Image (cartoon, one colour):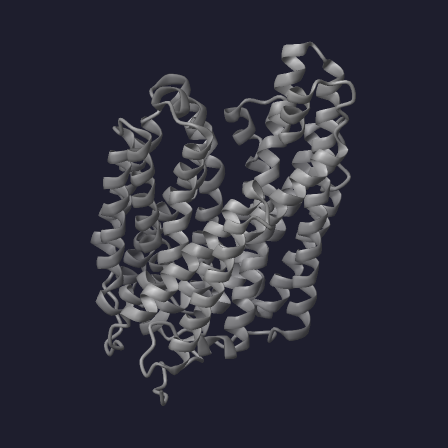
Length: 507
């Protein structure tokens, strides 16, 4: 690679990183604005949930077909289209007059994100190889991690000084910077011999994944045995089974599911999903702990997540250097072990624990997750043929997103059940009991209105007990992942694709 090309590729990487930072903080920035939007647009709780879930559903459901389409029509073109959709949806959300318009705009943001996310990682195969690719993956993983806590930090600041629509308008300069950099510096790349279009595979994958994610989103609220949840899960299972059969028997499938026969791809994807499970689990319980138990507002809570994110960035960098010496398995195993240790230390948290102690185990967990994600994603890219990297990385990203959604649903159910079992509501009237056992926010509201500091203390203790159960569950998953990676993942992934183009099979 010439010096000029190396410089252009570094600038292209900068543009890709800016794009994923925008995706990261848009996942969380809406949460801090929901109370304000509820008041201004007269939105009930169910409507607010759809504002959040519309993004998640479209994001997870469209990753697979969009990754394959980017391979076919060009990744730079697809990325610029995704950024344009993201910008247009941001403008629509900012000036929405009704809750329905916000939901539609959030769905548009999900569509844009589903184009942006797999293409950013897939583009690295056209820019870098070997150690340079591993370093580039580390940068992108760090960008994803940095974006998540920026949501409440930036959102909190904007809400203090401007109207709620600015939480969407803040996307525009970021998207513009990413688009200009990508347009100037990112070379176009595509599959020179793409398979024919597979509309059946696209429809089956999208319908199946949307149904599955919808079910796991609804389960904590409705209950896992609710008819709607059961029927939707069964429908998702049937459709995804049909998708699997179709892709395995199609001469030119949209997604080559035989990728999972490759141990590097299989375990790289699994380990990335497990690390995401731990990260999403922690990010689900930590903000509520910081705000309700420790008493920080949304902006301060976001700032106090920084030890987690700074450590995640550091862990990704350390793992990248270790990968060049030992291969991907060692940093992945070490990262999952460190993650397990950090979560178990976190399980020692009590309602009286200081923020200093909490920041310490945040940092340990972040270090481990960063050390896992970067080499796991690099292992996937290392074995992918560059011409099919969009479709391949879309599989991994879909696993991460659906695994994260399932993790939050399961952990949310565990959190709610443990909290209800542990809180003491003796002597409260029935309406107050319902509110106090529904959530810690409800308990604190009841305690404030009725002048019951003992109830507030009981809610704090119950929530921390529930959070400890979630951390232990995440630790168990991370520990199992470390053991599996040690036993089954190859020590080093060879540099260069080891998966051939999709073979033709007989239908």
